Length: 211
Image 1: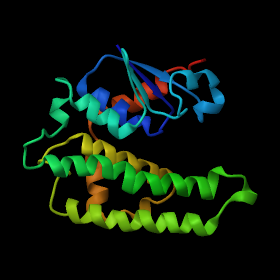
Image 2: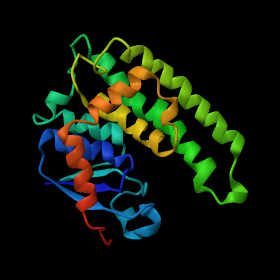
Image 3: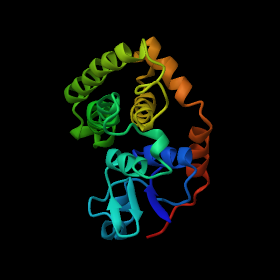
Image 4: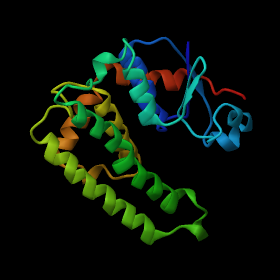
């Protein structure tokens, strides 16, 4: 049994969505945000105190991109990956990590500088710079999606999940108006998948865990 530690709409949603796409059996442990403060014993499971955290027997992972790669290395997840040796392998791998490193990182910093810090510690200039970085990366995404239905190999893969989560976060931060046309159309397409709805329902139905 896979244990996924998750906070509502956090990066762990990537992993939850993929588990639903795979039809996997898993145990969803929903924590209040931020878990390292609300559930101190969680640090015994994940020393980073962040979500996601996936526990599979003796294996524990706590980076969302690594978890996507780990799950797609299994037989059940193979349909959502591109394998080494395939012409699209490098492209797939690039987009899996683009979703976090190029898109989510500046958004997380924007959230911190503009919203999460106490008002007297917020940094509007830094927040504006993070916003500009994100918008610049959107242009890279638009150039690809202008002539592709999906990001890699002409089909839905975990790369789409990785990048789509970043745009979900951007939408929550009020940046949807910055999405170019092909990006908007692609996001609507991937979020119409039944597994996306199932993941949203799963996180809503799961009770908050007490650790």
